[in-house]
Image (cartoon, rainbow, N blue to C red):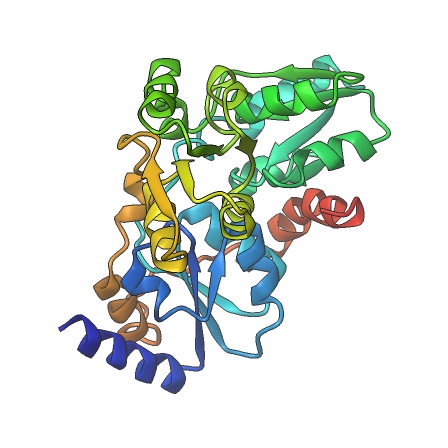
Length: 307
């Protein structure tokens, strides 16, 4: 049945001149029919290179917004309208605008995992893989890093020469991993390297052999000569690596690292979106030209700084 639905999706996307974008955390059956896979920013950049009418985002809301901002002339649909991101929605533009008014010399650095509304009041955007290098390159000495205080703490550690202010926020899934859990995993698999996402707590990241983005973790594990790894990010990445590296062993750092918002999208959601793309029943991302222009400022600055 899955193969039949996949075949129908491949047929429909060709008929509708649509491109399917799937975040790396999506289920294997969705990744198999995607035109592009990767992290949120990589998908947005890849989307700009496609000559198509529409994009179907298999991910969460802010990711679809980012695609729309970088390809405003295209129609962008979110496969499941309920797929949000608790971290992206933790802070609003009003709060950050108030802090900016109080500390006008402090530049606002926004993790890409933020809403378009929030991006409109930020100075530069970063990804988990570019945060350190971009903050280092900024001319500002005083920084407000939002929303993830764990990633912000990782940047603080690597850019100690700058005054980096953090607010309490972050990914509830990655930050659920405890120090005891990483110690237990290392004891159970002493020969395994620990690879974690910097959205994990600082004390967890501190004990890892490598901390980096999802794509960084995938690349590290594939290229490493080591044969055993403990993966400290969404458990779908462990599965992907098991398929990709048959000669290596991969273990989950914690079974709690499962994102319900990523898992909510199904193959049938993709199918139904394609079926309804022209009748107004699919969930389309709509943004005004003025909001796109405002929100793109921080993304364009990220690109300028080499993000």
